[in-house]
Image (cartoon, rainbow, N blue to C red; front, side, top):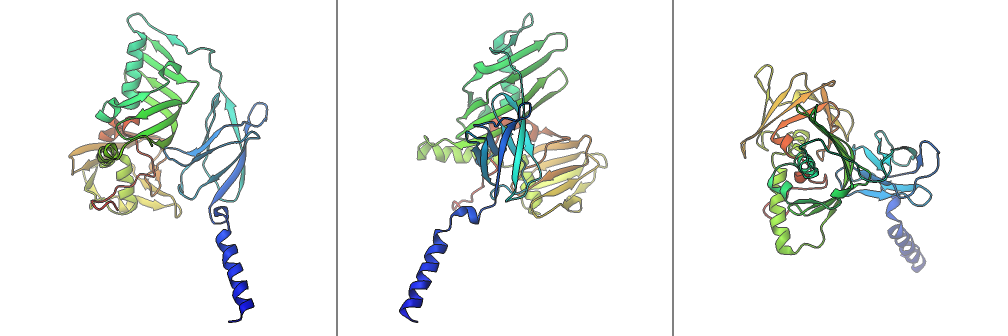
Length: 337
């Protein structure tokens, strides 16, 4: 090999190594706009729900997001003062214009209190339903609880909660800080419903000793959860993961494999015309799932699912934000792998 050829080869290799990650990563770009004025919206959050993966639009409303780590998941666009929007069907390399609809809030947090219902009672009721009632939930703190808008109707016994700012949640049990954009919260005597989107961050202030305890709590929160169930379903590991399923209407056991349909390499559907009972044998917890206005769950390999028309019951319903794990969570074995 000649010296000249060697030098050329070294240059080619060096150039290859210097190629930025953007050329290999799956990136989407775009701008965020106000739907009423068409003006750009700076500092909007563009992210995958319940994950670490997100970015913020610049002063001109521009953004760039790597979609590689979260295949099949919807992208959320949120900003203070606006209703969140979803980018459901997207292609890497494409450019998107996102229009956010402004939401009107009072200048000060609203509080409408019915006779016999104090502010403290309303906040307590909200936290129980939103964060949950588990040990992990009780160790959560909403740092800006004063930003809530609270309204209680004593005739219908309905509690409505909204917030003009994202809720900042410190989950001291699981070691996460969460920014949560609350879109809806309504509880009455018969039902409770809330909708929102979250961005996770690791709590980097924890010691190694604290993290050891937190990892055990994370594992306990994961086992038997919706995320665990859907990942096992994706990988055809329901039996190995100690899940058993029964069609509630017919009373027959099913492995659901015939009910899983492939949409593409990143998304699948679980089809069922009947509610299903889900038993996680390892901890003897029972859950169920019912369908309203749909006969399917769209889900991905990491356990993400489209919640539209889906109702969870039992153990999986009890796990609220206080037990929520980011979709990047991985259950490690005894060797840390």
